[in-house]
Length: 257
Image (cartoon, rainbow, N blue to C red; front, side):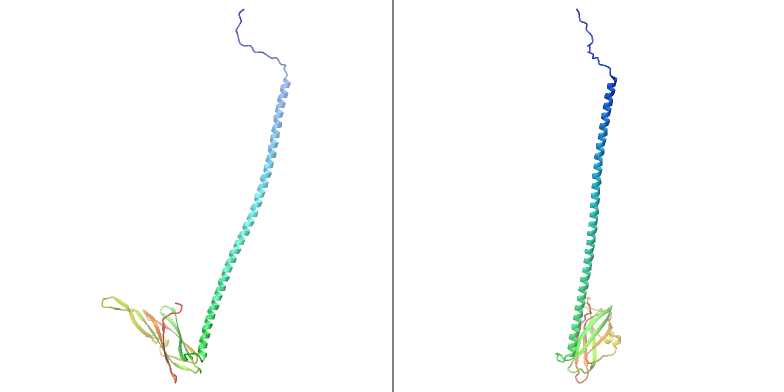
């Protein structure tokens, strides 16, 4: 018998028709997904709340630490400012103390000089008795104008009045009067001498003195243009039975130079 060839036959299974079973399966699956989603949401919400709490706590901690750091910085700035002001005050106080000490030392030096001067005038046992040219002080207050102060003293056993006259001369060079040598070169200014009466309009007559202990002779001179003094020659001539003639040269040195 010849076999008949054709398409492959599949076995068929017959199941009962149950529509409610499929519906129950679908409802169960949907319910399971809903419960899973709700649980996932709850878990995520819980974790999110914990994270928010941690973030809030950390933020509060950082805020508190920032506040403490700000207070500390403010205190440190105040301390630095106090130290700076204190240092400036200390420096100022030290400078004031130093200046006070310097002034006191200058005062003591001046007083010691005055005491030595008065001792020299009043004590009869000092060497070099008689009329003395004590000192000459020069100072300038304007170009070409010079103030002078000549101090005369006498050291004697008995202080009687002494009197006489003073002659003051200025020696120097006049730079405005240059001489020419044979080769045509210029040389330094000529040597010149001026009497005080030529330069001090208030001392046109001879300077007189009369004192028992000491006398200051003061005045002001106007230097000629181009004249540069080098020396001051002071000649003192007393009159009377014990007449003396003194001569002393001083370098031209303005006070403060």
